Amino acid sequence: MLVTSDIGKLKKVVVHRPGEELEYLTPKYLEELLFDEIPWLERAREEHDKFVQIMRNEGVEVLYITDLMTEVLEKKPELRESFIIDHLDLSHIANPTTRETVFHYLMEKDSKAIVETLIRGLKKDYVQTLKKNKSLGDLTKYNFPFYLAPLPSMYFTRDQGVTIGSHFIVGSMFNDTRKRETLFIKYILEHHEAFKGLEKGVDIEIPPGLEGGDVILISENTVIIGLSERTTVQAIETVAQTILVDKKLVKEIIVVQIPPKRAYMHLDTVFTMVDYDKFLMYPGIKDRIFTYILTPGKNGVVQAKSEKSLKNCLERSLNRKINIIYSGEDDPIIAAREQWGDSTNTLAISPGKVLVYNRNTVTNKQLRKEGIETLEFEGSELVRGRGGPRCMSMPISREKI
Ligand SMILES: NC(=[NH2+])NCCC[C@H](N)C(=O)O
Image 1 (cartoon, rainbow, N blue to C red):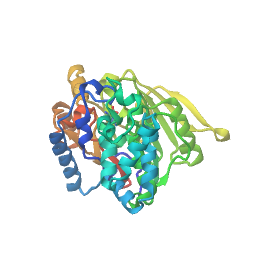
Image 2 (image 1 turned 180 degrees about the vertical axis):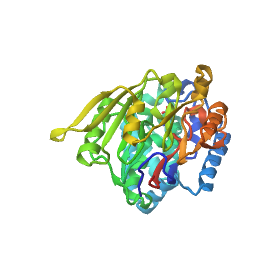
Image 3 (image 1 turned 90 degrees about the vertical axis):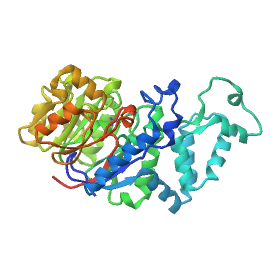
Image 4 (image 1 turned 135 degrees about the horizontal axis):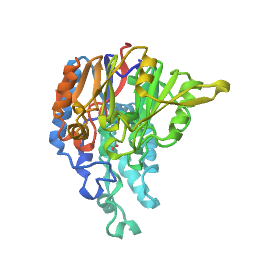
């Protein structure tokens, strides 16, 4: 198993079908849970099923993260305890009796229900009926209504981890709200045979945050890492030491700094690779990005250098001329509207063939004009979580290009 680029023919991908966690979203907590609107679950699932169907029709093996995690707990029941405790450690339950109650409540469930409950979230009022002695938190009003918050961004599996070559790096989430998401993939990586052949990429703890939406592998030698609202200098420097010097997974890292903004929280919401020599970029950032190159320096330390032009860097790394396609036909209004609908968040399933939401008609047409084949599906509910086809996919195996 190997991933050496963002465009090689996709063989295996991990996804999450949106679940009842979306039904625990309320207007009051949207911002905290990183959503902009409340998706209609039934329709979101239909859209997601279509997304999966398209990939399967293209010969991609699609794995559901909930199935993988359930299988891990079924096969190794001794892991249930630590898996639940890991979640509790990242929750904000301070009261020991409450923690005990939640722990036992979860431990009594079967593997599938444990996985589903941890993703859906756990409401306080239900647990409270199980407790004999009340604690302060049980009585006060206007509380956050969950002991375990729902994980509505779970379907953006991209951010939870990345494969570089034959190594897998578990994401380090920037926001508290998303930290529990990575526990699933951590256990799966260690205990599920679907991940056999992938080694752990980084052995030390990565500071917050390094999210997969910021990592774009353009060739087996070069990875781009977005420095964004979600990915920090500290995390990049930590990972750079491992992947450039200690493990030598790539030869260089191109760091692309984008304005830290909700509308484009990760690099892949404004920039994706669509073919051997073609990239799609949201024009609203073209004059607002900064590029740096990290390479292994002398004495085993990483050295950094500023670069004038991202395009030149890409051409030098790929050793060919490249074309940057500006989305929305480079029109500021169309491009901004379509970027909000994830027009620039394409998922390449082979060089020159990408999955996109059908709503972004101008950008899709433009891609076709540039010779890119677009496989379209509706994402009107899915997009309400601010993510597109690339965000919803975690490739773990692609053919070499
Ligand atoms: N790779 C991506 N662009 N992921 C999109 C993540 C969206 C998610 N609601 C968040 O704000 O975290």
